[in-house]
Amino acid sequence: MRYERKREEGTAVFYEVLEQGRKAAEFFYAVKPCQTGRGDCQFWIEQIHMEQDYLDYSYLDAVLQFIQYKCWCSGCTAMYTRISAVNLMDMERYRRYGFYVIAEQMSEQRQGNFVCHYVLKYPLPREWEEIMNIKERNIYYEGKR
Image (cartoon, rainbow, N blue to C red; front, side):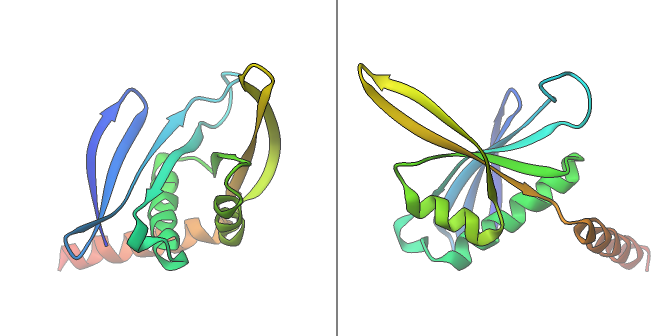
């Protein structure tokens, strides 16, 4: 899979994912400052759209691993996303990857119709930092040869 950075709008970064030259997915994320103004920034996955032929878990796992790497590079310690309760398949996909629900939010769409959104969190494992440090060192030393 090849990840192409398409554009930036404010704090949002947009990517397109290609598999053998065909569009497989697109997503964008945003790194937001802490709401209290202190502490770590928050890494929000704003949207992931998988094309019809690429709905298999393996493709979503590959995209989430790339996003996890971007989260690590940004200095954040966790990824967050907001999922509508209407699409339980998305919820199950994120849970399978390791996200868990930290909040529920109700909002009124139209008069009398409410929509429930879940906020999910995925903390980066401590060993992720160690793995990435080893990879970064290997890349650095290979470039020095």
